[in-house]
Length: 322
Ligand SMILES: NC(=O)c1ccc[n+]([C@@H]2O[C@H](COP(=O)([O-])OP(=O)(O)OC[C@H]3O[C@@H](n4cnc5c(N)ncnc54)[C@H](OP(=O)(O)O)[C@@H]3O)[C@@H](O)[C@H]2O)c1
Image (cartoon, rainbow, N blue to C red; front, side):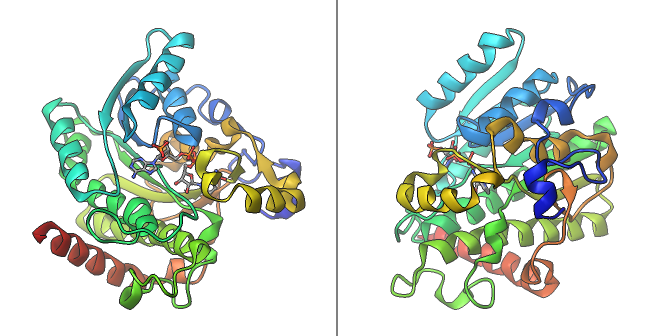
């Protein structure tokens, strides 16, 4: 899918394109047998993802750090869909303790888990360490989701096995994965404030989202487990994600105005990858505008993906001992 298709909305091989909405790509899909977790489901693309999953009948758990915003999101969804099944659980992805507590709370509900939408994210925030001492964009966008996924994996495996329904994990990455530090992931300087770049740190975390999806996909396929793992770039959508860089974003938008989507279009690729029957068995791929696309060279690097996985486990082990 090239620039022309992006600005004109021309449909690609999937039958959908940049102008397709989340409702359109899931038309006719019945998801009433599915339970889904959407991280960051209280706003932006995540809220639209939660809304459309619920519209198709799924039981949706909105995982959010701001419970007030999550409750408002739930009420908004219920306003137009009184039978929507929405629950809310607290999750702060930048905190290992909070991720573990979220999984405990979810397990206590004794629900199955078919879909995990790793959607939450922060962008371009000034240098900051998480409570575990890890750079904030990496901690939130990658490490929190990495741990969350690992802790929920057994539940997803059991669900897939007992129901015979393929489970799916979707990682929200970004085209910004191409704007990372040299070498992709700065394993030796992940927390270095002096050479920190807000842009490159975001790109690094979004590259990590793809590498994580690819490595997990490879391992699950090796195990013969019926869980697919894919990553997506949702497009450019005006949301609260831009809160740390309002002026930069305004300027960027002037030059890229024809490339921006609305929120329903922004959630389409996530919904397509999460629910569309055409994607049964498809794993380890990257989607843009609802069509498979080749990510950067770093994103396709298997050794980098394995190294990131080991590194992430070590970071979590180290932080958990503090
Ligand atoms: N919008 C775009 O143009 C664009 C482009 C490419 C990729 N993406 C990706 O799409 C995803 C969704 O972004 P969006 O545009 O919908 O932005 P958004 O409206 O800001 O949504 C992000 C969500 O993540 C939550 N979040 C942030 N930090 C968290 C934490 N530590 N723990 C739990 N939740 C946390 C936010 O909650 P709070 O309100 O509490 O902060 C918010 O609900 C992100 O992963 C982003 O990187 C977006």
